[in-house]
Amino acid sequence: MSEYKRIVLASRPEGQLRADNFRLETVPVPAPGDNEVLVRNHFLSLDPYMRMRMEDAKSYADPQPLDETMIGGTVGEVVESKHPDYQPGDKVNGMLGWAEMGVANGNAMRKVSDRIPLSAHLGPAGMPGMTAWYGLNRIITPKAGETVVVSAASGAVGSVVGQLAKLAGCRAVGIAGGPEKCAYVKDELGFDDCIDYKAGNLEADIAAATPDGIDGIFENVGGEIFDTCLARMNPFGRIALCGLISGYDGQDLSLKNVRVFLTMRLSMRGFIIAEHMEEWPQGLKELTGLIAEGKLKYRETIAEGLDSAPEAFMGLLKGRNFGKQLVRLV
Picture 1: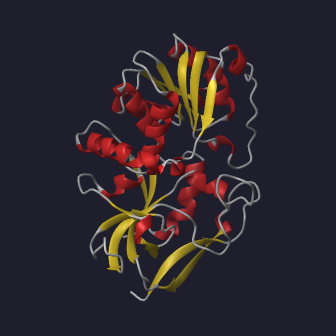
Picture 2 (picture 1 turned 90 degrees about the horizontal axis):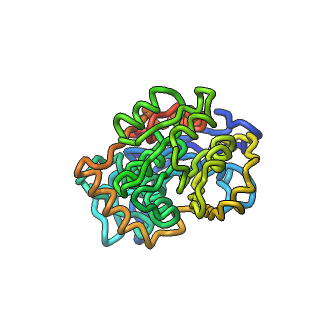
Picture 3 (picture 1 turned 60 degrees about the horizontal axis):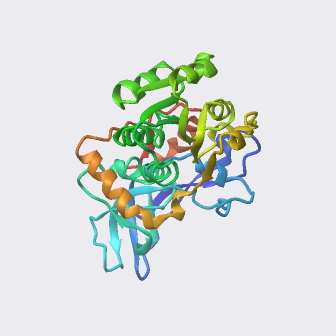
């Protein structure tokens, strides 16, 4: 191949994301330099954080530059290597973005295990799985018998959180949108209960599902869902703030139950898993083992071809995906 396709950010979204904020380009295949590898990507990961990176605003990372390849995690196969640790044919995980191919420094990549499917290294054994593992184990620090509530429970992160909470002996309560997703969370993932936030009985349903209150919240959504859960918190409850997807397109995220942080002596910590790379070896070893043993289940929504990425990403922000949203590139 002499050329490949990539998608760049063409303009910054104003309010709701639109397809014309992206542009599909065909560009020459680059040659790897010293310590670099050329990779043919097989799968692209689509994740909510990408929406925040499109804004030209102060955040935990620099904004996505205009007219450059959209940021994104990938798994693929090494085509050419000038790094001593990689050979053609090696399967690798990296951040080569919304592109069919790419070059990266080999030190910024990692080989992946063949014990599990390649795509799983972008989901339960990748960044989403590590986000779940870290937020639960290092921030919520669950104890057997406690109640942990997980918003976006059918998604790539939330689905792993609840299963890990169950393995730790906790009562796991999920929140998801629609009866199909809630059935999946309970019947396939093994949560103790799941609340359909679209059913219109959020406050009563959360109260019924948490008769002993809530000890830990793994928050992916924000807004009304988070606010309602706060009112059910037990003293010294812990909150892992992972995402606020309900507000990523400009929706209101105000809270009414802030007083419980004082009255219940709560602690909340926002975190970015890329800042805790020292934890990845242990976490990935545990997650990969659980997947290989069939103890950690997951589901994927796969869009076909790079051209489908913008529409799939906009669908992700509206909750149209089921489980981990991927784009198959090969």
